[in-house]
Image 1 (tube, one colour):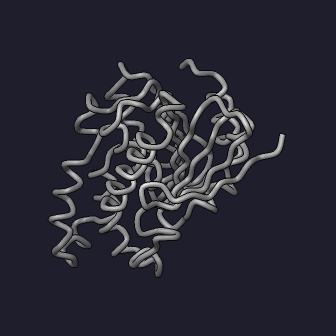
Image 2: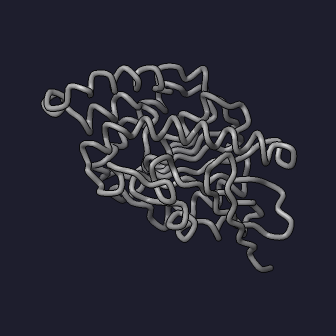
Length: 242
């Protein structure tokens, strides 16, 4: 059956949607720090449509169709300082888009995010109760720890504004308030040689929250999605039990 492609503006945000004529479930697909909705759809969209999903991708705040600095020029330090602003705003955008445009047809939704997209998913789980499967690929639920790794003390000293940034991150960090996270299952897939977001952050969260419905898996990769990770994800989404 042919894939239907829709482009709309919802809640002031440009969306790209892939679906069949009849889809019985909804999935938000979120790109990483220098990506956009088209790139992430090209990578994974059709795989999820084949599973029966209505797939929705949005450009993160300051990305893609609403691109701004420092992400346009990919200034790494400045981007790191503004990442959590992007995470917070994009999560709020997705929450509003779902509640105002999809909730009537889909009582729950799945979320798949890569890297920064995973951060958006983690934070989203603290502000909505409608997530079924939450999938974070090569990401981390430990926001403050991730920021410290990217922005160590010597670098923080170069940017005085980093103190305020860290205060914001402390208020957002899902790992310090796991009881506020809402999902029916959390899939955390990481690379065992990732030098951007080390897997140990995710692994420690998993061990600290063994009472939660979590699947944690490691793959032989750096900060990159690989075929075994993709194939396992498809298998897990077909099977809704841990």
